[in-house]
Amino acid sequence: MKRNVIIGALVVMVMLIMLAPANLLRMVFAQVPGVALVKPQGTVWQGSGVIIAHPGLSANVTWQVKWQLGESLIPTIHWQLNNSELSLQGKLTTGRSVQRVNIEGRFSGLALEPVLARYDISLSGTFQVSPTELLITTSGPTTEFELDNDSQLDWSGGNIRYVLSNGLEQAYVPALTATLKSAQGSLPTVFIELAENSTGPLLTLTPNREGYVNIEITRGFIELMGRTWTGSAKYNDVVLEVKRKVF
Image (cartoon, rainbow, N blue to C red):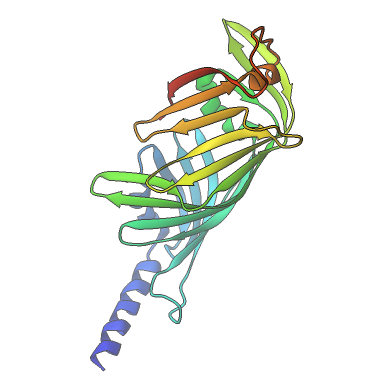
């Protein structure tokens, strides 16, 4: 009897929270650096708004909480992000220290313009995100991200423009596939190769938690960008390695 009373009280408390105005979620988004929720409508249980993220990214967001007492006392938040250049959807399963975010969908190269502009890069084409599960772990003031399973990002191919030696360069690049390899306790390593007739990775990105990414560039990738490599290296040989601060 006592157990049923406690469960009932918890259910009532959760329902009151969920039916609270969506405006309360602004405080939640305020905890994420560079992210804000504006124009919230509806309730915490079901609502909509606009997410704005640095550096100049924005999208309409809708959410709906689904909670089945027979399965779990933990609610699952189903969400969608949309604007003219992207359509992403998934769900968020909350926990005390680990949050699970499932995501899939598509976005265009134009959606990346605010991010790529700082590197003097622009590209066309469309990206397709395969179903991916991201783990967000909070330990004190530290928040860490890792993939729960390998994932894949497919790019349709298109024109790439970039600045090299103060000159504007342009190249047409065929479809590429990026494989994100999960690793427990660390960020995923990304292997980029041709979507068709691949002979192996052309570009390898290895990020670390200090915000740096180690980039291994092969002769094949340089030639894919419309440049000529005069050395004796083979197509898949790494000929250049750089380390960049990206976050």
